[in-house]
Length: 222
Image (cartoon, rainbow, N blue to C red):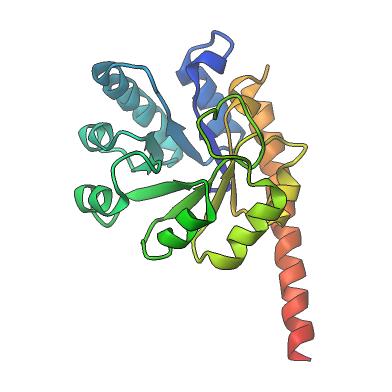
């Protein structure tokens, strides 16, 4: 599982081909890509997914399909990300099998606790901060909310919503294992540079957190 997760948005890509933005992002350090197409036809979504999958293959970067389990199955994508209104997680796992990467969005603590019974690969904690790319959510988690999720969840946490190089380190410190972004890369003048900067910030914060945890464990032993 990755540290920097690109979620695509064609409308925010400044008129550039989506494949170009994805390729630059991966070259800059994005190590997971979620293809999100809320309004595309099924045929277009499948054709696009196959193009992106072929583009990612040489880099070993997994392709995750947003919402559409049928598209993930049709294209043999690496996995799917589902929301609370999409196909129920147990059914998605049954259809996709044990090897598929399946992420689940959580917007309330009740949903976080319910997900403890699931063998999801990660929880998408959404949104951390207000963002125009997520308008149908139940409110912001904020850093304190994310920290609470970290305290009660056994799952890997992917944070999303209003994240960028300026706040990514704080989000990692609060408990996220991975940062997911949309406009911070898709709308960047140079997606490769934006991804590289973000990846550097995330890695530094993860290393800092590991040192802090190691120090705390050492003090506890003493």
